[in-house]
Image 1: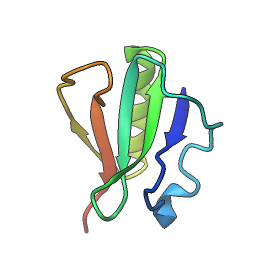
Image 2: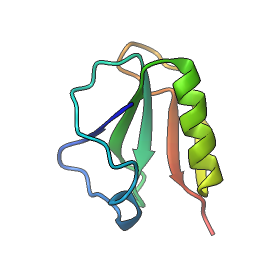
Image 3: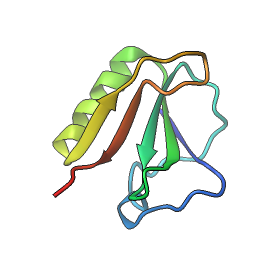
Image 4: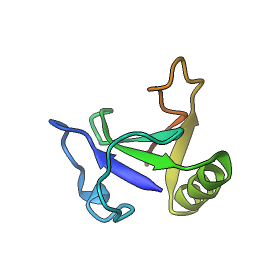
Length: 87
């Protein structure tokens, strides 16, 4: 699994420790976007296959994140958006 911070997007406080992975170019098959409090995707998480994606999404849900599944329209689309649960 890899994560990539997107240029020009504000990293929220909760995102500073989120999945401390080495930044990497976006090239894997399964992509998940993480939103900041302004509704902007600030990080892309890449998993090598659908099983890794499912495990990651389960871990994020168990940590209090809300997952919105999406239908990708091309190879650059994300399969889900992850954000903090609204209180």
